[in-house]
Image 1: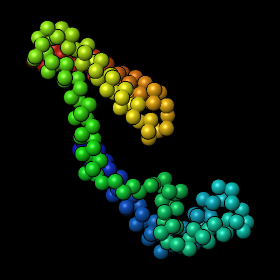
Image 2 (image 1 turned 90 degrees about the horizontal axis):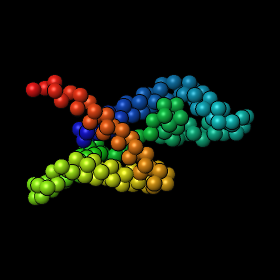
Image 3 (image 1 turned 135 degrees about the vertical axis):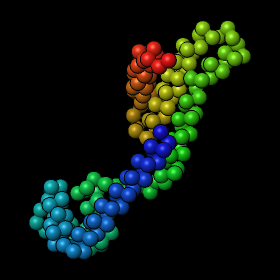
Image 4 (image 1 turned 90 degrees about the vertical axis):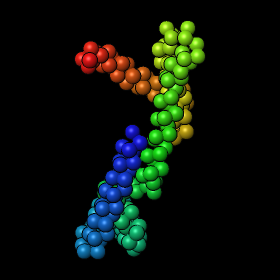
Length: 176
């Protein structure tokens, strides 16, 4: 997961940089065509007449602003300055921390063998609680109520875990 996050972040940045260079080239080589694209963008936003021409003039008077507008409005690309390494490490840390939760019940069995028969339900419950906590934390980003964000992630995570468990059980006799 961490490598996937690293590569996807890096790929997004490379794609955005390539598209930015293309937009810069188009502005330099075919400025009237790009100016017309800006005009169409603002026309769709409801600008007309002198207001439309003023918006086009202001936007195209600064090359960086012009390119930024084209990136966002035409291509729907927002370049973020996040480090692929930091994104990958954060994903690794999050998956490691949450991934340890279900294992704790089985570690407890080493010290209290009587827990062996309830280790799986304890692990499953602890995992769902951890997923709920992570989902609740999403509310800081999404602005949704903490209990809705937590419940949603718990339901999605629980469904994914159930599917993985069923597939594992169905395939358990295949490998010997």
